[in-house]
Structure formats: C-alpha cells, structure tokens
Image 1 (cartoon, helix red, strand yellow):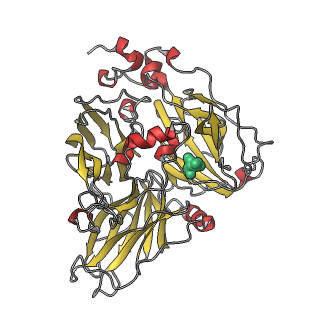
Image 2 (image 1 turned 60 degrees about the vertical axis):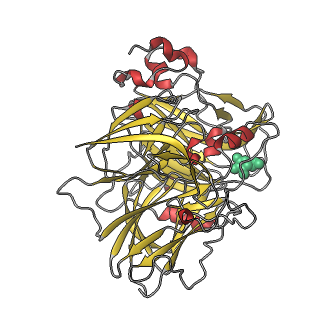
Image 3 (image 1 turned 30 degrees about the vertical axis):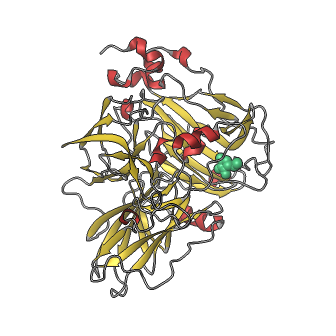
Length: 543
Ligand SMILES: O=C1O[C@H]([C@@H](O)CO)C(O)=C1O
C-alpha cells in the first residue's frame, strides 16, 4: 500500500510547559502526526518548508532506507537541505514492523519540536508474540526555552557556553515550568495547553504502550505509579519479556511495554518522567494514568515518585544487560567480524573551542553531501584520508582529564567493504571536567546492529570479546554508552549508501561526536535531482 502525507513545517508559538516560545510544527502540531503503516508499505511524505528563514531535512529514524539512501534525511550526508519555501518529497519503504521515529536532522533543529512517531504493523495473517487490548504511544522529550540558534552559537563561542540542563521535561508534548516569577503573558500555569497529558484506561485491560525518547540531552527514567511494565519491543525488535518498575530510556530509543490496568480503579495514578545520568536540575514531568470512571484531571492522592538515583549507573547497566532478543525471533549474529574499530569518546579543545571527538577526530559536516560527492566524483569536497580505526589503547587513561591537544576537526569518513562484518567498540572516558564521564546514546543510520556486550572500565581486547553474547543479542539502532564504560556492536555493511553514526544528544553531535560510514557506493542507484542544489552539487544538478 502507498501511504501519502502532505506536511507543512513551520514555526508557531506554543506553550508546551506553560512558557510561550516558538516551536517547529508539522501541520500545526508538535509532536507531529503519527505515521501509521504496515510492513512493506511505501510512505510518501511531501514536505513544504514554511520556516521562512531556515533550511530543514527530515530523518526517518530506524527505517534503513534500503534502495533509497538519498531519503535518509540528514543534510550534508545524504541530501542538500530543503530551502525555505521549497517542497521536498520523501519516498521510502517500511520494511519491518515496529516503533520508529521521525525528526528534523539539520543542525540542532530537532530540539525545536519537529518530531513524531512511526508505527509499522505486522503483515496480514501474522500475529505478534504478545497480546494486548489497546495500542497507545507517548514520546518523552526535554525542552529548552532558548532557541536552537542561541544554543548552537553558545557552543561554538569562546568562551564556550554550555546549553545547560533543560527547563522542562515533556510527556507527549506537555510539561510544567514554574511560572510563578514570570509575566502571565509569557508563562501562564493555568494555560490548558500545558495541563498534564492524560492516558485513560479501562480496568482490567492490557495496553501496549509505545514509549520513545526524543530528548536533546537527558537520559530518562519513566514509570507509572503502582503499575508494572513488561518490556516486549526495543527499536523495532521483539524482546524476551521482562518486568520493570521503571524504564530507562535514552534519546533515540523506542520501546513497547505492556501495562495492565489492574490497580484500584477508584483513583488516578501518576506517570513520571525524570532525569537520570546527569545531576538533575529539571523538574520531573507528570502525566495522569486515568481509570475511566474517574475525572481525567483529578489529581492522584499520592506524591509523585522521584525516580531512581540519577547516578546509579549499575541500575541502568542492569537494564541494558537484561535486554535480549525474544526466543523465536532471534537474528543470529555472524560469529566473527572482518574489521574491529575501537572508538574513544572524549572532549577536546581545538583552537580553544570545546569539541567532542572520536579517536581524536572531531566530526564536522561537509558543504557537499557525501552521497552526491561520491557518486558524482566530487571527491575533493571532503578529506580523503580515513579517520583511525583505533586509539592509543595501551597508553590512554580513560579516567584522566586529557587535553588531547593533537585532536583535529575533519569531515573524513570510514569506507567499509560491502557486505563485510564490522565490530564497533565504543569506549567512554573522562570529560574535560575531573571525575566526570557522561552517558551517550549512539545511533546508527541505515542499519540495525547486534548489541554484543556492555562493560564498565577499559575494554579488554583479549578477554572481553570472549564474553560477547552471540546467542540471543538484541538488534537495535540506538544504544547507550554508559559512563566510563564500553559498548560492543556488530553490523553487516550490506546497505549501499552513506550512513551517519553519532551521539543522539543534539549538542554533542553538533560538537563533533559522530562518524560516517560509506559502503557499496557503486551499487547505489541513480540519485534523484531533488537532493541536489548545495555546495558543489549545483554543477551536477540537471532537472
Ligand atoms: O558537552 C558538554 O559540555 C558540558 C561540560 O562538559 C562542559 O562545560 C557538558 O556537561 C556536556 O555534556
């Protein structure tokens, strides 16, 4: 089936957390409309950029774009940005069932509010390995009051101005900022638009709740008071079910949990989203889990739970370890790999600017998108040398503050042999601040990868690979790298195109925390002319 959507992207005044600011909307909404489809469908989205002064591009997060690498939607990698006033049509197949996302992928634009869900159902005649009565979804987010321009400018200034902790957390686009010291015209706590999100349930029924995170910075813990959640899906793959009280979720991840409305139906319950992994300076977001005979806005009689200790890494690591592919739905990983990369994540200063680097290279986007440069022989448009596969593993102390004055900025890319098996070990380290290492959710475009293992400390090249889970590893597209830890992934470079792999924290990718992979470029079909028009592609553009 073909599913057509017509979108207009523009800025509008919104009061998601009671504070009025410009938000980027799709057809007037943020979160934008949910795309509903069935496995095998073709999605066509005609996007009109009505932002007046800003380019845009939209990424279909978790959709591998097999055969359509030019519609991955990352400006500078797979396409030229969509200019104000222009219309651009994305067209791609959703090849797997599951819960996915879409969002702006141009600068730090995602955090302005352009995001939404994609739900892909199983083909007719196929049933899912779990039962539920209703399907619902919520997107968790964090929310800043400064514009993305102010934030990006601060990050690329001397002195460096950090974006700081978000002003609010949002549950399905709703949060509550403390307006008490502000003018009611700017921040009005009684505005209906920022009343808590309500999820109404029928006693005794089971809900599949699709929970996604689109945060700019925050790692979150989500829980529903008194109700247990059974995790059954992660990033579009079935999970061997396990029960949690709270779900840890990192930016770019999607989960489905089953929740049974099995508590006292004569009251409502709090659903709470709170910050973990960074010292919280943001109030938790509250939603109401509403039993249908009770008024939806009636406050639960209890005090909302604060969530787990923000710095309890062991608890978060335990959830990461607990996620396994579901029996009967295991995609067996290859037993060995052809290439092993160990990617050290550090902060660096380069010419006094603060950056993030991977193996001492801080990534920056080229003016001419790689996909076009590689197909049209415009190789002079980016650095041709490959960034290093490894760092100085023997001598680097991951617990020390290091200046790494030899770090460089580059738009160079890794070129992978088509159909080869690639291992990536992400190695975390100390930041430029003493005794500090952060959580980074890494997202791979164009592929799902097997998650072979996690650990804390320095990855041991001799012994840790022996502990890899090659039996039932989950496949994902986004995975956390825990503080001072390592995460090991394996994927097959079988999708011709150019694919980014980066930290899903908006400011971190902007500061250079990413790499780009190319594979099978000679197998990429004829590029559509709609992706051209910037950098040196103007010369090749023939309508
Ligand atoms: O990228 C970051 O910069 C700040 C801090 O390390 C420097 O002020 C921070 O907390 C980040 O995550």
